[in-house]
Image (cartoon, rainbow, N blue to C red):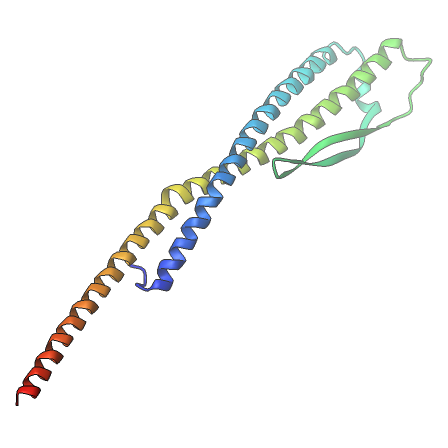
Length: 197
């Protein structure tokens, strides 16, 4: 049980008021995260479709040496802030190309070379987006847990502590009043006896 004092009562009232102010803000954040999560899932689905279409076209590649000509150089990511969560998004992929003969390769080789770079870019973007989506899901989970903790556990517990402390303080005040009345009656009774003697 909490300490019974006016200071403890004030403490629990302040904590309850602070939590009551925090819950609407957290609820707004949860709604923003949910909305952003839906948007990112939609973008992720579109990117997967693009990647799958590129992969399907790449399967018709008659030039297996395309894989050895193209390699990933540097992957640049940009930091973005989505609903207060720091995420990363693919900015650009730089490729390194091994030398090959332009005259000895058919025109379709260049087409599949470009297709391979687009496929790698789509895969890199997909990986970055999946990682960012996981961060959004984690942040939404943490925010929901905080709201539930505040609304379903801490605030009711603090309200119960406030009721308990108020009741005990009122009982103490009543007992002090009764003690004072008894003391006053005894004092008046003794004064009356003293004056009559």
